[in-house]
Image (cartoon, rainbow over all chains, first blue to last red; front, top):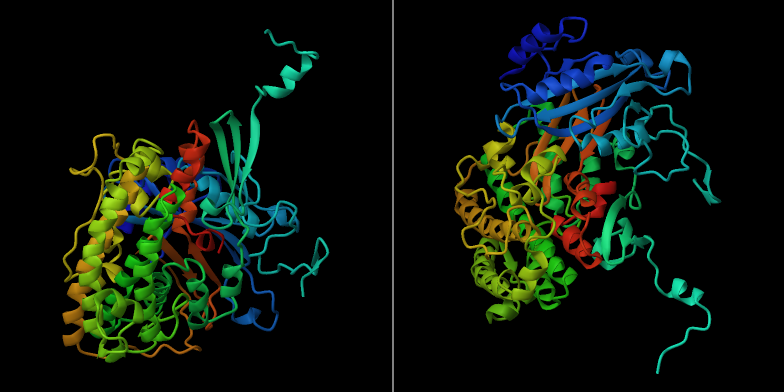
Length: 177
Length: 412
């Protein structure tokens, strides 16, 4: 199935409040999904007999922000955070990209991480990928079996792939720069 | 004479009946790098295994946000340092997909030749080191002897042995040299005079011919070795459903009986590279497997790699005449300040250890907004917890080794 067919199938099933438009001029078109419904949509695309997206290739977070005010004019994204799901079906051979768009901070309160439901119950590998997205981009996955840092030490502060991340000057007496 | 225990509490000290936490790594030789496994054991039996990773985290993705793709190529080398060429290729193809670039036929066949040599070198380490994990030392030395020759060839081609940075967006940094001095190692094993100058492609041909015979020796030393079969068959059985759900790819997935290889089933930009090549996708079950072997066990994963070396030899053989007769330049121009379009791509390629994915978000500047490396070993490692449940402690290295992980790629 191509992206247009998948998009209309999802629209039919979930409606416009859940499934966003897919841009057709992109190299890899994607479908935007409302955060609250991602688990339902994920289960649907995994189990539907024409879709069978049984393989989660990748899950990662992207921070859209230009911290440099001089370059901000050329930056044409509103500040936000995305969770990107790359799916493929080993049985049927097609691919799909889903996106969940979140605010950079929950309720615009700096320091409170955005929340996204966890899909670890749908694809087991999401467990580790979500831990990484939490560790590096600071997205809190609700319903995750054990959300803790995976690459950085457990007592690390901040989330390194945030665009406004400040490099620590010191860690346990080790100078940072 | 009956034995008297003065203090009955001594018995309590001597026989421990509660569970024990055993910390394996991060400096344990059979964890293949800095992997730490936390094992909860009941006597010899492992009840729970929790992998802890991140000891080799070098912030490659954060660095990538500040460098142009050409500058980031050396960072991909340092991820899977045993298959640097394949990592270069994966990232180069992703960049080409983003900017809509096509390489010439000459560069395409050059890439197949180099990438498949890289696959042989990588599987030789995977296989040799696996024998080492199971206590058989000799195959490791033989595997490294063979790999050394490939590294010598890489050195002649690009100057570097391990971190090659050879395949770049647009093709490769240099064309293949015409004539080289035969590597000392190859001259020694084939009985040719040292320092003989030969065409590079002839040297490759001589090497492959010699290597083919060696594979039979590996089968005697490992594959058909009774001890090896005992240590690997029926242990660490991974069902295809679990493998897919855990995102396992490469030999781990194919060892579980799923015939899926991106060189055949991948995206067009990647499969186009292999379109006029003839090769088989290797997957369990095997007709010639020993009776004790179960689909998805350690032996199957090992055997998939062995047979993939044979397929890689076939591919290199086909690439040689194709490269010689191909037209075009070995490199299309891709500058360091080439601006990346405001779009995003994700591309996975079949690296020796599994499907390595690169996700690049362009931002209209030479530096991407986000560059992400999805590691195949990261996903393959995530099943260790499941596979090590209920196995004896001595089988943990056997299971971890059969996944053939490289920590540089997991931690990035």
